[in-house]
Image 1: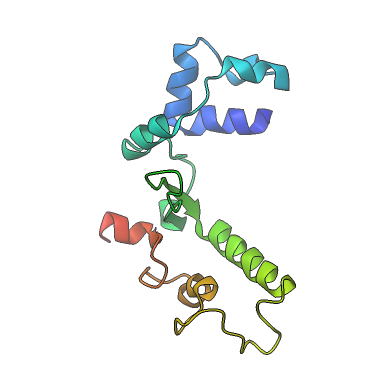
Image 2 (image 1 turned 90 degrees about the horizontal axis):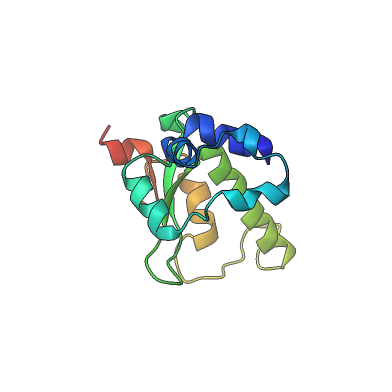
Length: 146
């Protein structure tokens, strides 16, 4: 936890400014009991600071980022970046879960949807493409217009 707090402080403008405003440094957070010192990050604060670029870690290669979003089940979808490796790992875990549940088979002929490409395969088929098949993500190149 200390490494995560130190990383956020050193690499994101939001957490740096927040901790400066509270007269804190990562050294002030020594145990889990100290976490109450930091305010809870609300969705509204996240959205506002995400738009301003303050919540994005500056030590992550922008070309490795994919814009992703929640499905918005509790209201407006929340957009955020994940790395291409994190996206690929998440998709692989999802496919494994579908396999373990018996929804796909070893012969890869099982169809659980009327779509031409089953939803859970779309990102894998397209990865690391330029979006288009998976509606809730975009590459950083698409976002920046490069």
